[in-house]
Image 1 (tube, rainbow, N blue to C red):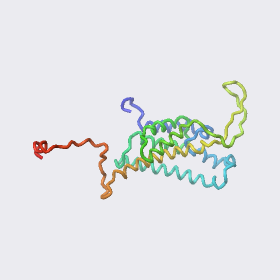
Image 2: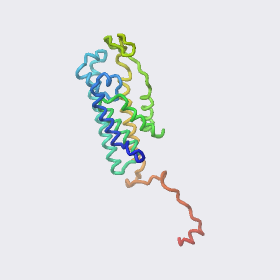
Image 3: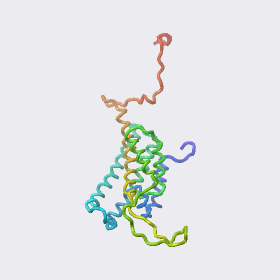
Image 4: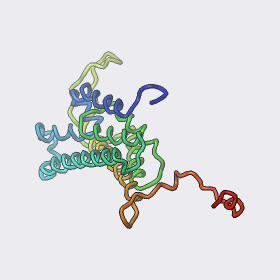
Length: 233
């Protein structure tokens, strides 16, 4: 950020949010490359017949679970940012930006290449701690460019710009449409948990005082008796 003069966490969040205006209008794109359950909620609320293969009780309960999970992510985001602002937790700007981008992606219909910002920031984290391992595992799974269609959708013939002939595309409801948004949420919760965990590690069991982080403290030189006497100690 200092060298390039751009790429601050605020700019990353703005770029991710501004992409929503372009990608959110394309429901087909959201449905087949999702980072959020917004498109699925739209289908449940307004085009429920398209999910006729899903049990009715599951469709009734899904909105409460999905919206509640997104709200929990908002609470975690606000808690983490407030604690970081007050100096109660230790978090790098990259991790804070990753948490913010994960939240934006999980509550909007943005898709396309916006997920690359999140993956890049997560891969900066070391493989250490349950929360970070959860986030990294989710990021690795999100990087898999393969999917399995479980229910095919009827498609009308369309003109191929490559061959100039009428073709019938193969599409349908795939596993990734339901799994990928969950992985984004898991990555978000993993980063939040890892950040809030630093508060517990830095808190002394008695008195609630903040203990110094000795892992980053400068080494202390040991003085011999002669050195101590010459220094007047």
